[in-house]
Image (cartoon, rainbow, N blue to C red; front, side, top):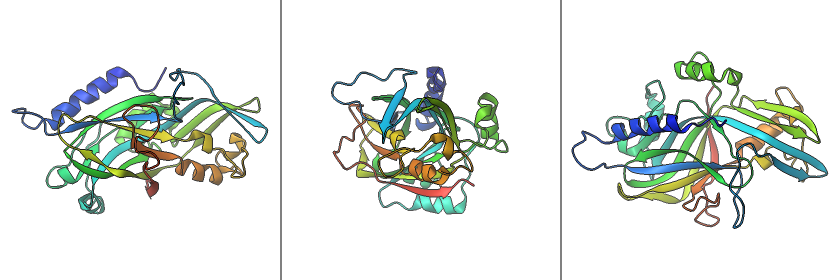
Length: 285
């Protein structure tokens, strides 16, 4: 069973509509952005992703099978072009309320940086070709050149995290879990990687009005996670905490995220080779 249930997102989107509709007298001034996730492009004739379908990678004589890949995300943010108010807010230590649901900052920063309070959120990545819809978030019309999100290690001291861990206790101090096999031997890999990802939107994302519907895809290149840098693979079991390849795999994971416009939902950037360039922000810790 996938981690994202339609009933959860129906509730979240209803709350989002209420939060973004102003006083309810007149049309909405926000436009929806729908976020999808993928691990690789679908290709022109690729079948739709099947739930529970393994993904196999063969390199350097080794065979790596992904049976399940899960990661915890928290807090989505879109920043306008040449608008440094988000950075000012971040430096001032602005507070967001607890709980699942959308949140837009009050005052001038409302139009400078749009927030969606995601929880934390457990994402069960699609394996093989194809994309999977995660959620929609409404933003004010404008031009946005950056999206931010957190790869998050839940901590029971945080109220939101405590609620999440009550449902997913196996993610205490864990942001990423992978189950599969390496050369026929089963493994479970976990990581406590916890940091903000900043993805440039190239070209910038233009949100015109409330009739605009924008589709973005967050593609996570899981095939690069256990690459050894020389065309081969490393055993995921050696990348767990304290393992020989822990740092190598952490660096590979950091570099594996990419966000881009994807109107046809094929896991490819609609703007050719001009997909977003990723860079890491501050660590959660």
